[in-house]
Length: 505
Image 1: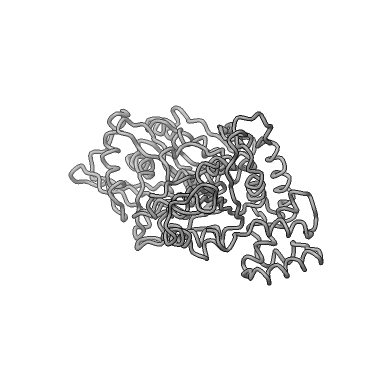
Image 2: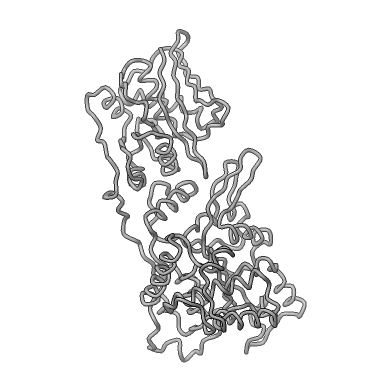
């Protein structure tokens, strides 16, 4: 007696449809799993035994052979538990369902017969839908995430016995047809940070507004205690909310890497790894490649506080994601490409003590200052769009009742600028920072005077070709904030002000 059901596993940027075949034969009672399964999959036989016993189901007293096809591809996830249990029920004729050809079973079994949530449910369902499957048995805890995917039929289950009763027709489980009406995200959790809490720093706030409007990377430089971290943490409050497709994408990435893999991500990510973090934790990887902080900040903000203190290899690893908006993690067993479209916000001090060039005395030796300023390579600095000085604030102003502009007002201007970009590029995810050279030639629209000013400044300041095109992108964002259709000299002039001084980090 034999049977076959289908399952799917998602890992990184790929997924795999697996045929779970079960054959019952005479011999000593045993469960054998074949098909290039790792230890987590092989241990399913113990989970199946206990789940059958605690669910009041009969486990056939025969030699049970489970094959996970294709057999030449590694299987490394407990998501096949539910499919294995279903295949055994079918092969032993305890159930006689005949309409499972386009049905996928996804779930991990508990010893008590519970169906537990699994990682990567969104990627698995999207791949299954693309492969032609339209009905999915999934853990009930994964329903909130799965409901984000339209035009599929979900069958949430919480107990193994529920599957048995459904497939026998005794007590059918509830079918849920997903659609546009179901795509309702939970309310945003919000944040306590707001630009109105930062006293002064008008120049830095303006630079962050431009960064948010065009998805530009930014470096804040200044002495300690001037509010650099506060400004960076307030940046998400002026970004537009996640769209539903963006939420789906971000939720899938976090489902692959974090412990809370059954929740929906509704706020734009803000990731702030410590400078002592390992390169793998930042870039991603491991024996079974998972997203790192670079990918977990996708569609959000990656904050590197005290950028020169990070390991040089970690900082240099930012080159590909800052340029291509993806990160490719290559290991001996697998190569995975994760999305990495984020806004980099970095901070730095002028020197190790932090007071070089300020009114306070600097205690660093000259060679220490030079060594500190040379920690960041030219290619990395060339990929940072905006540079802003954050100066000290007068003590008498710290407790003043001056009205600072709140994040809500800035967010309105940012949203309008983003909307103009969406209409111009016919793509809600494309911003000025992501323009190619061809896009710049097509959409830049510089006046003659603005182009003359840009060319003259580039010659005198010895600006690289990459920085030249970057200045146009920044000027385009400034024009969008002012609802201008063309880039004029004022926009170019302001963009030039955010260049990194030669003597600064």
